[in-house]
Image 1 (cartoon, rainbow, N blue to C red):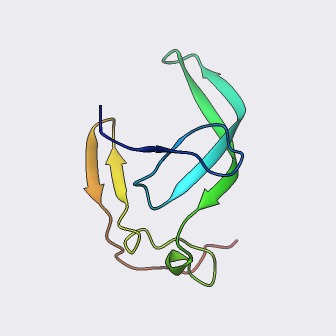
Image 2 (cartoon, one colour):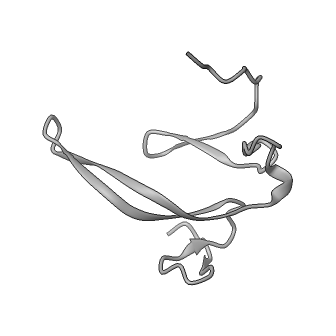
Length: 92
């Protein structure tokens, strides 16, 4: 429906979107039923990440603006991501 190109990486069984600059492969770790609205919280364990290393900071953070990624709100509203500022990591 969206016109994306399917691609496969390594021995990972699920397809990725070829046009995506960041590809993250997850393995199902746990499903938690939420009785309040009859849904499930799905938790995945990261098994594979592929991205351009130029987008990584020395601390390992991904520069989503440089990667030209999109953000989403709800199910159908997409946004361009622009980094505003960075703050020190909060520690107790």
